[in-house]
Amino acid sequence: MKILVTGATGQLGALVVEKLLQTVPAANIAVSVRDTDKAAHLQAKGVDVRQGDFDQPQTLEKAFAGVDRLLLISTAGENRVAQHQAAIDAAKQSGVRFIAYTSIVNAQDSTADLASDHRSTEQLIRASGIPYSFLRNNWYIENETGSIQAVMQGAPWVHATDTAKIGWAARRDYAHAAAAVLAGEGHENTIYELSGPLRTLDELVELVQEVLGQEIQIQNVSDAAYAEMLRGTGLPDFLVDIFTDMQKAIRHGALAVEGADLEKLLGRPVQPLREAIRVIAGK
Image 1 (cartoon, rainbow, N blue to C red):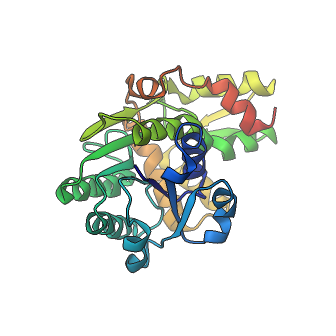
Image 2: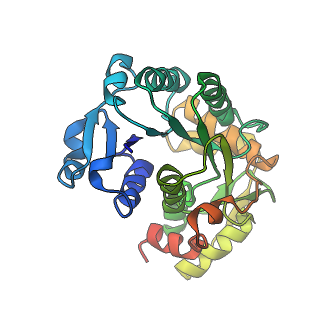
Image 3: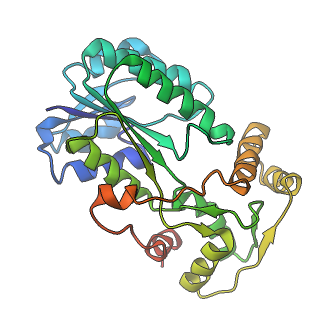
């Protein structure tokens, strides 16, 4: 059985491959990357490194040749549905028998703009006829790295989520869940809502305060004020719009999705957020 991970030199993909190497022979693992030089360390371990570029569909069919199980890690940017379509088409042409896709929690009904591309990709995978597993990830605690680093320098934690709850978990846990699905059996045509324990932003900040040993000022602001704060950091308008919309969606419950699927796939408890925060803060 040949397993291929796309985006294997990215933050999530690298962790998936790292976990797979603990349970699957390296000869049974392949990766698809734009720059094969960046995956030289994987090739040295016996991993089959292939060149594949989502913006050059002709490279993907060759990259996916002989692959049984594919992890399609969602791409970033404005063209990702087209990129995902290219990957799905290549998978079908190459005879891939199973696709796991990293989606977002409650993708089918989420009001977040961010969910739209994931919803479309899930529909494309279903239409392909290839058995699938949708790994609907909640928020990575690593998404809060900028805020944690800012408060370490004395800045307030600014947000626009009110008392909404979020199922933060460590990126490593989401990666290990994906590896379990790829290497395991019985995951055909499944949907997993992957979340850590639900917390409000205030509750998260309490944990950060404990780790840092310092008091943090929290500012819950309007969407307009949040957008203005982001512009002040130099972010381009399109990113300001994306991040502000996500705050609004969170406030309306987009990430308040709780369930046991993450721990079920992991076969263990999720990593305590305190530990992940310590890593982010360098403590």
